[in-house]
Image (tube, rainbow, N blue to C red; front, side, top):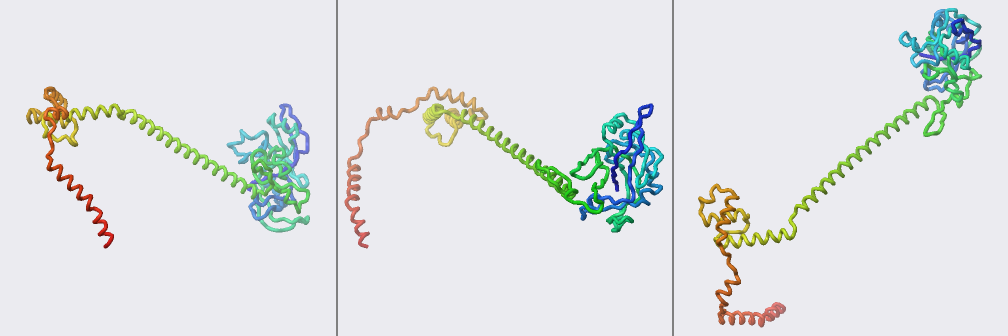
Length: 382
């Protein structure tokens, strides 16, 4: 598990002839109990965990040796420092003369980057070790009487970071810079107890600052992410709905245009009148050519063909196109005179109606009117 510790650089920087910065600083402390959020050390059921750092582990030979040569960084790199990232991250290194200074570990550091040196000289003087260690959960009491919930051991240093108060006092933790290297202890003047209202993280929800535990912050982050996802889905659905509406509007526009074209192409009343007159004239001519030709339900072309056939014979219409038939019809129709009903009446004169027939019809009607009431009366009596 990866951790951070914070101490303040307690000495002035000494400049070398080449402009490098040399400093001796306390970077770790042993024999104490530090308070961590349970969620950061694998005990999510506890708000805070008291972790004991025994002197025999902090000052163990292998642990002390692991300080020598580690790079100095500005802020904690997200994934620590390795051979692949050293060139991009290191601004200096820790020397070999790592010493125990009472309850502290003191190391010499060479700062080689001018910008990093200026950062320290301008007031950023906190140092935070980034290291890995094992945590064993076990209740107990230190030799000095401090209760603990877990023990830290097997320290291995990775880097020492120059940091400011990155998380801020309201979150009560210091030293994780721009990226989180590992769990940092909760800073408190009382090593045994801490007011957990001070061990809360501040998160922003809809523009409001809310204090909550790490677990609460994680839950809020998940809910916010789900909300964003839902909003994205709603936006996508709206876009699809709008696209469907646009497609339907386009279809309606096409139908309107087709309707207008059909209306424009439809025959006008005067056109219909002409069609009716032309049809009547054609039928009259056909009947004048041959009164036996049936005209009902036949097209103009069929009527012309029938008239030509009746006048000129089957051979003339066989295999003839409609255009040829039309030409032949004109030829035979120009000499045909259609019958005029009025002229026929004038020519033949009015024919008198048989008087006996009229008399008989009149008597039949009178008898019917005279006896009609009798039928109605007999029906009522029955």
